[in-house]
Amino acid sequence: MTNEERSKVIGGSEIAAVMGLSRWKTPLALWAEKTGEIPQEDISDREYVQLGTELEDFVAKKFERITGKKVRRDTRTFTYSSEYPYMVAHIDRRIQGTDELLECKTCSAWKEKEWEGEEIPVEYILQVMWYLGILGMKKGYIAVLIGGQKFVWKELEFDKELFDRMVINAKNFMQAVQGKQPPIAMAGDKETLGKLYKGTEGGQLELEEAAMKSIDQDLEERDALKRTIESAEQRIEEIENRIKQEMGENDLAMTEKYKITWKSQISRRLDTEKVKAAGIYDEYCKETVARVFRVNANKGGKK
Image (cartoon, rainbow, N blue to C red; front, side, top):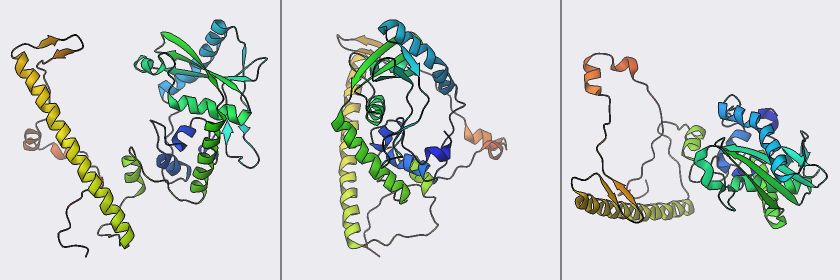
């Protein structure tokens, strides 16, 4: 599927972002890509993406051997309905002789805890639920190869209430895309906002009274949160310093719950003054432009 085609649909790998539940992409970032405000990054040449594709067949065959279920590849594009043609599904495998599907995943060994017990990353739960709802199925499976050394598989039952919420969110999101109305920014949108709004030198936003009150309330809450963070950081430092004092010259301490180390380590930093003195600073200095967000008290009131 081309980027232009992707801009007109919502697939299973995107529904978590639409719901505001993705660790990798916010609703605003996805909206910016689909409206063309920000070019969509092409990651098809990334090695982990290529390996994931190549290992998909291995994961499917491993699932077959462990469960005894036979699967077959299905490369068709499924749409939810004529009313919502932009809600699409591209599944990995069908379970033969059943009304069930299989999604194949790979991940690094660092992600093993995300799959312990009954745990499943929320992005994959939503992806499978999206596919089940669109295809009208009642059960799906996720099989994952972890770090190339561990294989697990999980079963998911269709949740109609969750799917209905997903449909509503998808409908509202696509309306925002078509109407060029961006979703509200959230944590994780700093880089996206910097790309969307380059800034105009000297431009000033004229705020209505209601908007001013809303922003003042937000910034007052921000100030209170920053004070809470500062207090917490101070308390953390106090705790750490007491333990350091207890350890003295020792670099290791053990409790029933914790292993504590306080060791010297070497860090290397570039001596910019010497580089400047050598006359090569400008040659190796890379200039970047970024908008800096600052808030100060307006002692003179609105002007």
